[in-house]
Image 1: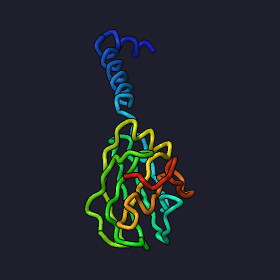
Image 2: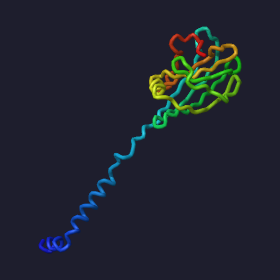
Image 3: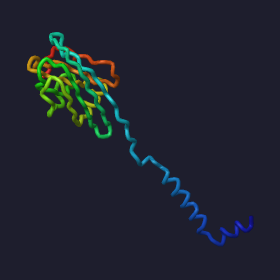
Length: 167
């Protein structure tokens, strides 16, 4: 024990060095400086007719992944069996168009993918299942089919007052 005490008395800077090393080690393990990354959220929706007045046998799905860290929504829309060729399509936020979709095949069947950056309000509406994809045709310019995005794949519902006159 005397040797140990004598060592520290003869070299007073050693305890300080040890203390500094310990403190450096503890602060290096602190990950509070790293921002927490929120996990991506997957959404799906199945196409149904846009309104009671629509007669269609069209089917399809919309799948999407939302990244809350970048607020980016990546989506893929697949459809088949439209009465006439797709003429227009959008993502709606319980009514208003929020994302015009371009580059889709003007056909009765097809697939299109894209990305969009959502606002904070749109992200909240997505989480509340208020966002839906809509495909318009010449026969149904107000919209032939819609697919409401939901965290579960439990189907889709038309927007409130679903009269098919969306856009």
